[in-house]
Image (cartoon, rainbow over all chains, first blue to last red; front, side, top):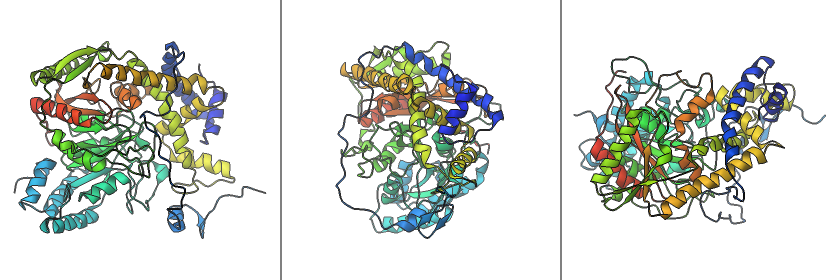
Length: 95
Length: 491
């Protein structure tokens, strides 16, 4: 499988990365090189094989259903590029 | 006084305990070495004041006889570990001037045990790379050069700053992380020792995430014993990481010098690649001979799905990365590019903040997870991963204690020499290491010799899950036989 220029633009938008028109051919080439490389997986017989979901055979621990952290709003917004009080500021989303 | 930077961690611990020198003296010696080695670009942030304060505190504790196992030992920290109050960027422009309000679990355990932080170390952006060339702070120089050449070589990656700093004697040890070979490959390129422990052995909490099912922290050190000492402090259960295992951390150092007599060592025939340099082949044979001389039994084994590990990795890792890196949105932290609406804000911020390799991997990850392609790519890769793990399980079930392989398919190469036209050329560096991450197993890289140009080469030992001790015992045998290697200073 390989991707065309339209698909490259679509993936870029899905990934929320702005891509200029002159970057598209280059990106298309690189993505197709990677896709060509992974193509060899199609020769593996995976009939009846379970996909891996956890590499270590362990039961994932469940956390206690209690509040054990919080009241750190100052810390949460400390690195934000634009805030007002304890709120993150973004361009207008809802008209 | 002899140069304090040339000691191993174990030797420094002895000197500190005997009060031959103080942690402040040891720390100052390393801070001067760092200053004199800025051309290597191994550190992206030096924290001399914090280092001296931590050293004084350690000296106080040593004086009171209340010293932790790493009291007063100066270390470098890969810039992927969140350090409270100290800028942490993953060497990406998108994390800009991010200053964590918390400390990663692994580093907090090192400080608990008395270690001293010298600063933050360079790495490939978000740990995506095999040469430390994708860092927003620029490439790192390898302290090793080809004999008779002035060309600066890469230290490997992604933990290139860690490996370079340890090899150049700028720190006594360093933290590192390994998703596909990022501890073991740079260790092999710089004649240092690097261990990627079993998945779940170290907490991932507070480490910038790349591919969560593959990422593991581990040390890069000057000797096998030093690596064992560091891992003991770094490892351990953490309720904040649900994939960290709740089993006790052994005294890894006790495994050093333990007999390997009767151990069964597998030599996997699939790792003998076409066109593999004769020097690598020779080194591999030498390693096998050393283990045999120490009483181990060598057996040929087969890991039939080896060749599929790297392609499967380049589906699984980018897929997880595309999901993990969705958090860099220009809203909550890091870089923000202005835009007239929220979508453009995301798109412009991420285009400006991510470097070329990161953009490429996020895009391929987005593609393989997108509707209509998920089954063909991602699901198939996860099934192949099951088969790769089963290869190892079958091998260990036949009584094999560890597997010996080369660590890398070549020695270090020049900056800008690889991957320019085709990204896959760079990816092939991890061909021997990536299988280990896919199977969640522990792997150690130990320096074993030099090539004809005088560059270091390493061997890798792969162990059963949570049997890092076996790797330390076997690694020590290789280190004893091969000796230790120090680069001639040119910086």
